[in-house]
Image (cartoon, rainbow, N blue to C red):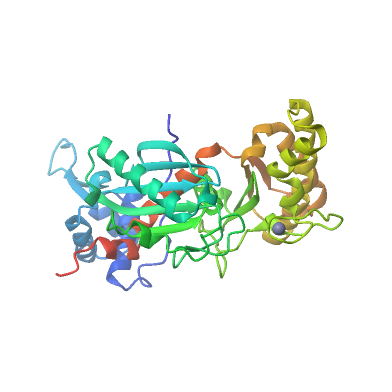
Length: 396
Ligand SMILES: [Zn+2]
């Protein structure tokens, strides 16, 4: 039912470089979580650390219950070895993927298993106070239904259809979201929850989700979402999200295309999303034909728009040389037209060296990519040094 998700492999900073105690604990936790080492002796072998050092840095993880140790099945002879596993019951993550009109909420455990998931209506134009209050209420209901104590929530991850300053968790001048500019999203959860809150751009989360459901060799990866707007999430060669200096990396919807003068909601003219997004296509058929477009007409328009989006993607291919381009968003409901339109332009335009191994594919996760990416980001954060610090008791 729910797709199996591979945890991202730990960042492979060598143990010699990770001299901080929490960095070492985080390294061990990720090795266990990703199944690369499931006993103390394997951890010592994989890391090259002394067994005593492994035990020392494993201790805090066992203490907070993040890692569990239990005896394996007894072998033919001798003492059975102890097996280390990530303890999925160590807490839960609340994830919200808030779109312009619709959203998804989920509760997941640390093993990336979805405990409950539901869709909600989210009209972001109604402002952050209203929308986030509804999200909090829905989370409390979901927790109550599953009889999960709110104190077990270890992290909250929120995706927004806006550029986001990831460090502060604040949206930055979103063009279609009145009242959201610099709104302190994390603080709005403080009344009900004591857990830290991560806020990210929705397309970033989709890119991360898509990247983690594929082999690591499919990075660098670009996820291009074509819906009401057009955006791109960037996953680097080593599997990390690239957000840019201000969180605006991949905001390709406002790339200006020569020969176009259509007004864009951002205030400029000739932006790609002003004439090639799904929103623009719907405006076109609504305006030109008087609504109720036929499937064939929509398909033809999507095919043309896909070619125009392909021109921008071809530029990205030159610049970034991705291994995979994943297409997502509402325009992919016309999967064949979308794929054919983008592919034909990208393979014709981009240089052979950049397209030799490039594959252009439709999203495998569909409209769940964002919520899955939110859970992935959450679990990886829990296992990070920063995440571990927030789970440690403050007084020792
Ligand atoms: Zn624009």
